[in-house]
Amino acid sequence: MSVRPICVLILSLTFASSGCKTPSHLSAATDLNSTKGARASDLEAALVKDLHAANRGSMGTAWFQSTVHLAPDWLIDSPSGYWGRDVATLPVNLGCSRSSPGCDSQFSRRLCTKDEDCAPYQTTCQVLSASVYKPGDQPRRMCLGSGDQLMNRFYSVMVSAQKHLEITTLSNPTSRFWNMMVNAITYLSLKDPAPTIRILLSGRNSNKLNSEYPVQPLLDEITNEVKRLGGNMNALHIDVGYLANGWVSWNHAKIVLADTDRAIVGGHNMWDPDYLEDHPVFDASMEYAGEAAAGT
Image (cartoon, rainbow, N blue to C red; front, side, top):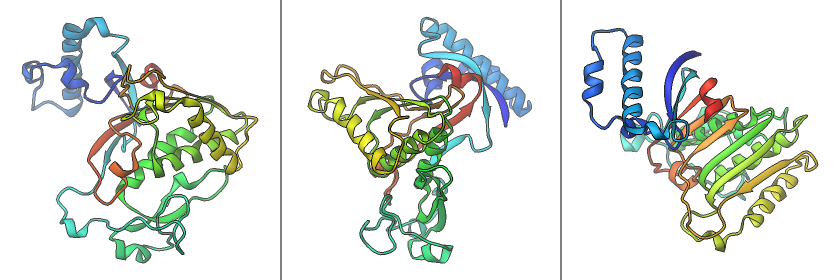
């Protein structure tokens, strides 16, 4: 893991456009013949300078300066491996009916044991870590597309929580993302001790008035699913919240934060049709740990 300076804009990854209104600062500060480390420092200094000049009043609320620990796979881009490929070679027909033989009943993906099982769907046999909801269980192998790895990334951060898990996103996770989240919450409820969980949304459905969708039924649905999977209801401490009175606010942050130490922040909503179907949209987030996660 490497440690790098970063300016974090809490709402999204598009902080450069917020702070750097013109490219002149960056071009003046960057020497193309310098080493990568020096260039990174120059870019960071230019960004901080512009943020102080244009957004000093929002320091500590909308942005802050800190350091992060970045793993080699810190950038989460989806779908990955699509650029430059012929459309005819991309994964196709990944979904299956949950009641059909050989189809996973939770994630509607075909179960497999080897890559040849997935050849008709132009993909490979992969592990879905998000299929585990009890510590010690083995994850199931399925014919997955690149977008499905998003579930593994979110799940991995969620189940790493030891004291507290924070999930903030636009609206309620849908379909496979919902199952991923429920599995993670069930897993956490079986830890000793179980961490506390808080889920903040703009609403259950971002296209509907919140007054039509009170929060209690959503909380009940989550806890009922956890109970069905064998979670420890006595250990589960979970809060779910959003503004109840119409479209007063449209929260657009996407954050998964475990123990103020490990975070995923960026552009991905947990929406199945957008990222997990055969024609996914392109999006990006980042995973980081360390000091900056504590300020997220």
